Image (cartoon, rainbow, N blue to C red; front, side, top):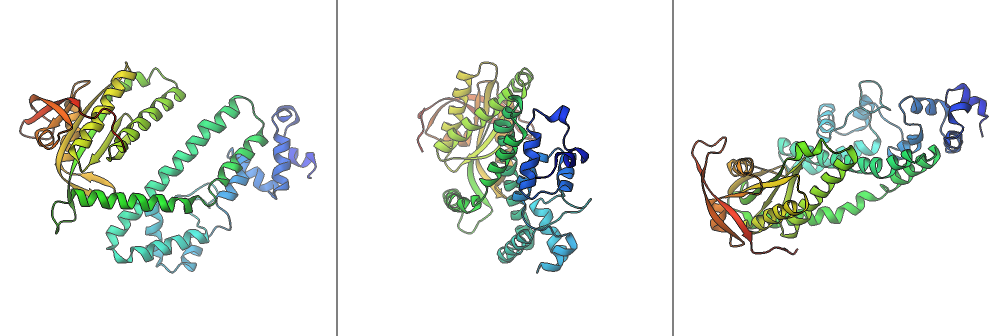
Length: 376
């Protein structure tokens, strides 16, 4: 065990300020874990003293500079750099200034993806890699924010010791060990579901870009004003409840949530009736449980372009614009969707001028859905 004076001399411990914080216990634990005083000082300077062991566990092994990574990789340097950008790699505090470092396992992952992508065009492969990087980045952000909000914040507020918090960080990082292997069966399931959606929405046997989907948008009128009355925790809980409800309602009818953007959800389904039931359930739920925010929505049905896990085209734009044009508690649908759906009841809503469309759009308004409690 290092003498206390060494920690004091390094500016890591002050008897007056740190006697009751558990700082000394933390420093002794770091020392027993083999962390040098220099590394402690560097971590302390960026507010990460308690996370240094977790950081090393998160990114184990030596880091390679860009030139060193080029030297050990089988990829041409320009291709390697392109992959790094596509995956979303940026410099972190441990990296040399202005440069991204790499581990050997990261270099191996680049080589694996390069091999897999060789059957596709270069542009399409890079597009897929960007989707992978973006999706994993979102998983990472969600994991970190969950820990900070649900574990670290309460411990800090309650005055937990620095060592206790560091141990929690280390335990949380440990949950990642073997985590990727357990994503494999879930990925395979979602790939099969995507194949199934494509088969059911296919327009023609010789067409592999356009598919026929019902596209829906539901957003919350009054959310901006309502959110200003909430603190960060309350806002987080509200968004969590909205996103959870949207995901569960949409998934329960066999549809897919494409994205959640603050107070708006976009979803698709090959079945117009399922999309109508999902939108109706979302409207009814928020109209009943949240009096200060009121839902509205839009649905359209037709040919869309599917790329990178997202959906594009005039049908998508029209569904979004119909949601914008709807009044609170109104769910507007195109005539095409109303004709194709037997799961909802409609009434004529006239013609609406919709932004981005030159001619008025004939729309109907949803009265009720035939299935209030859709099953999986």
